[in-house]
Length: 603
Image (tube, rainbow, N blue to C red; front, side, top):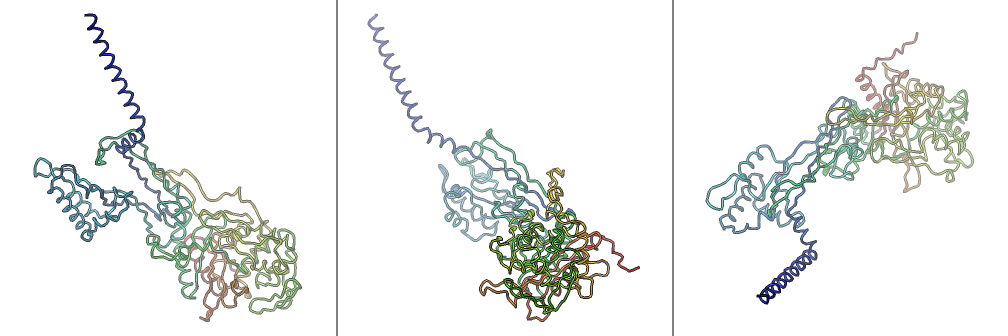
């Protein structure tokens, strides 16, 4: 008996040892193949991104400029549509091809187009193929009626269950109700920040919000079975309110487009700003484009030339250079300068003449601006010297960007002092040998018009959340941008600018208005031709800066038109081409803003 018990114990021990060895082997096998095992488990987990609604962009009056609307796309699972089910009958297989035909008919697609799309789709996108974007509500209703069925395996009856392999995808599509009106400022939104432009790019992350995700446990057909933990809710994007006004924008856009077409110009832009705050009320470019049909536009038409294009500004910089020289005590306000009867030569500086061969003798500083004397400004440059003139450019803000809230602003191009010559110190004061943008010019004029305080140009003034609450104020920052000119200097320059427009000899008299005392300055700049190394006598940039009312300026307007066609015989100067455009925009803007007319009658 003991012998038998001993035998039984031995057999049991051997069985237990074998079981343990098998268990150890199983553990070793699982450990050895754990990555593949975990990969198989991951195949039964599906993560679905929860898309956010992009915030809206509205103008100063609350008009919608950019909004996201919900769109529905029909998609298919290519593998499910063409691979047979397990134990599938020929009838079921045929039914699925009939389904594809019905889907093509419903969506208005050519015959066999879905099969072709499946076979032409890369394998990494095989399980989700969009066959129709932006279906109508009528198509959606028909889709629901047509595809909420599957063949029952046990009968010929149809059950209420969505056909395996088809579905509706939801997405937000960006729309721009104003069309071309704000194409260069609002811009357009792409899938990524790099594919966007304008305010849509500058405030991309703020407008986009934060995507959420939902995790599901799915079956072998990738159909959700249950929800898993680890999901994250989506946060819709915030919205922004702009300082831009659609009515003023319309004034600017219509005026610049009409003028460029009349003069057959290559391009042009107009900017309207509040000189007290730096708020941009309008910014229009010609040519323009439709942000909802980018493929139909040329890259050059999508460029916001007011901030991206550097150009030699010509005489529009003269008042700012003079203001800097007066403020630095380089010249006194009562200084008289001999303008050499229209021709000035200095060794090392070359020969300088007046525009249109004018001949001036002794001129005061005010008269130099009213008559736009090149020689008078060249002599102020000689008085300042290289270091003084460069300091003056820094003071005005011509050596750095404005930091406007738009992407693509170019930094000014001014050569380093060691590369300056006698030509530089005499040409820069009347707008040659420097490259600046329109927005940088207008920032300088804002300081002259508001008593000497520099401003930061801005388009967006507030951020609001999804409940309509203001969560952030944007725009003017007066503490950061301090004074650059004294009040006395500004009063002196403003008086001269009023003379440019309202005196008999003023170059800007085409901008004069009966209701207001307009102040401003013309600029007619020869375009430098790198091919010849000389300034062209055929191509010009015609510019004009103007503002009103004189006592408390509410609006400043810069219009710059590149290459007006001289052969038309209508003129090419800033006073002839651009000053009337400023007058039109300024007059309509002040009337729209209900700015009372000034009393200009003499007592």
